[in-house]
Length: 522
Image 1 (cartoon, rainbow, N blue to C red):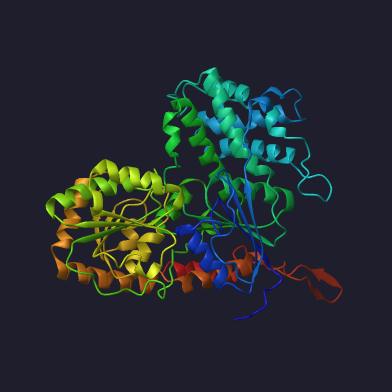
Image 2 (image 1 turned 60 degrees about the vertical axis):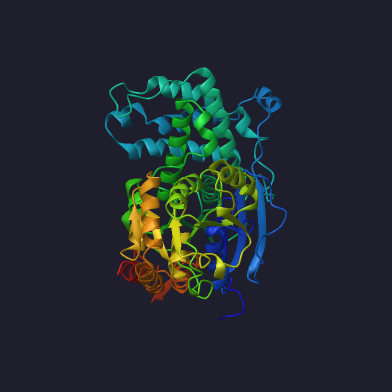
């Protein structure tokens, strides 16, 4: 290992994650940074939450900088100041909203690419309104240009012009109030376009809509190559508080997130999905097959060495943040039935974040399970995370990547998984899958394994072996090191022959990527 970072600087861009938050994705980023010490990392996290006070992880020597940016919120006073429109703002808003809902002509023809081209053009023009002036990246080109963006009017006009014969003829009603609400939420989301990125040879975006917006704006300003790690769910995520919004506003937000994802797939040099499931999602949303390099999730076997089963007390483990969209409610509902079938059974909730401890405690109190449920907040030693139990219930949130499932497998525990996302392909035949949305089936499967020690131990051993064969962090580090080298390296030098200057040819797909494509799909 080279102890001195190379000249290639990687901007690792997340949405409120590493190095400020301990979660599955943050742990994955940490292993990537610590495993690729020959690269210099500039860490940037963009969040709409409260700014973290300090990094949650110690930073290795190859981290040049770590910065967190919180998106500001619009106030009523700010809204009243919308008097002067920046040049091109109205056209940008119109393009964005027409592309968001599907341009009338494009929609009638079923041409989603044309609709997304309109959205991308509008988003890029809005990003240009934030273009920095001079050499100071923190001085925007117009004072808070989003506040003057006529998004509500553009949304209403795009809604009115939708072709009644198009594929979305059943659009919900959008009132003037709804349009204003949606416009405020879109303006807040697009504040990420104004976040200046550190200088780097490559931007590696890990996360959802917010960091991707910042990455796209940075790419349009500087031309820096973009690598996108894709771990999102197949249905664009609706956040817990959004169920109180009208159907029209939810439609706008869902389409906006999908359109941002499509734009990211168009602009990124490479997309690295975590699984065949994520690979298919990206293809369905416009990613070109030649730009996809599947890199499965991986964990360090040394952090999850496995251990002998605990006492004979029936014990179940669930790992998650404990938040409203973490899968906690389904786990508690299923465990109520497990406790009824096996009196004395215990449920351990591990990895609960500090922000969600109170919510978690409230949910436990509602079940009346009392001391049968035990809370293990972060930080916690990963060696003990899953081995405190005999069976692991894998019930992820709607947008959770499969890292916790791989951790449970590496720990050598039998897993009962809900058939969501890549759970089936990750677990293979080394665990039990149950249908999503059926806590009773989940409870039946857990009770069955708790009553069959021989079967669950055999499944645990098989799961660990499968994780060792396919989901180790050294493979992830090696593949991403090759991707970084391909994308962050300087362009090929010119070759000289006689008196003619001929650019050195470069294949459409670099040799390393051709090798990776074969290697990762084998």
